[in-house]
Image 1: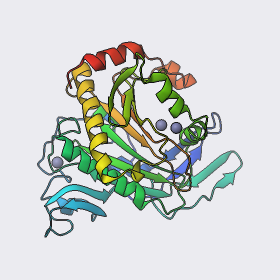
Image 2: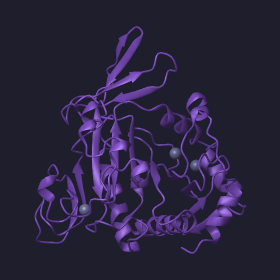
Image 3: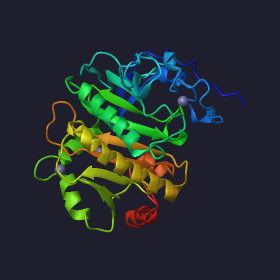
Length: 337
Ligand SMILES: [Zn+2]
Ligand SMILES: [Zn+2]
Ligand SMILES: [Zn+2]
C-alpha cells in the first residue's frame, strides 16, 4: 500500500519548539529534516556504500562549506587532505540567531529552534566506526569535539551537546560515521536536571565516582577516567565515562588528555561490540557545562539501542531495562576489547 506522507519542507525551513499542553514536555517540529534521505525508518534500504557519500573524501562539495577541519598542511578548505572535518548540518534541526524569545499563546507555547547544528566527520574512512579507528585517530575526533564546544562557548546558549548516532535504529541517516553538535538557545529539562545534580559539594557524579570506583559496576579505569554501568541504567549495557575529578568542561582538557578519552571510549565501544555484536546500534551523549555555567562534572553516556520502547515507557517515562547493570558490567569486563 502506498504511504501517504506530506512532502518535506525546504531543508532550511525554520523549525519550532512546542510545549505539549498535556504533558508539559517540549518537542522540536523540524519539517525540513523530512527531506533527508531515509528520514523515516520505513524507508531504510540496503547500505549505500561510499559511492555518492557526502562525507567521503572527494565529495566535499556535497556538504555546506566546512567550518573547521584537521587537515594536512598545504591542503585547502573543502578539499581532500583532512583527518576530521566539521560542516554545518545540511538539514539543521536548530539554526538561526540565538534568542530566548518565547511565544506564549495561552494553550500553545512555542519558541524558535534557534541555535547551531553541525556534523563532525570522524575520519575519511567510510566504514570505520569509533571502535574500528586507532587511538590516535579517535583522539583527533576528540580534539574536534573540544574545538567545537569551545567555539560555541561565547554565545548565550542554553546547552551545547555532542552526540553520536551509530546505526540506523539509533538515528543515523548516513552510514559514514560522524557525530553531531547541537547548540540550543533554550536549556532542555534533561540538561537542567543534571546541572542541578552535578554541582557543588553534593555533586552526584563525584559521589558516584566514590561509590563505584571499587564496586561491581566498574568496567575499568583509564588514566583519570572511570567507566561504570550506572546503578539505574535505562538500557542494557548502558555505561558512563567520567573523570574522577570534578571537571566542568570537556573542552578545557588539554590536547594530551585526548588520548586518555580516546583510549577509554574505544575500549568501551570494543567491549560493547564484543557483548552486543558488530553492528549493535548505540548513541553517545557528551554533557559538558553549558556556556555561562562553571560548576558541573562533564561525562559521556553510552546508550545502547538494543531494545525498543513500548507503551509503558511512552506512557510513564519509566524505562524497563531487562539487563541488571551489575551483570552488564561483568559482561563488559569479560569482553575482549
Ligand atoms: Zn562516506
Ligand atoms: Zn563532581
Ligand atoms: Zn548526562
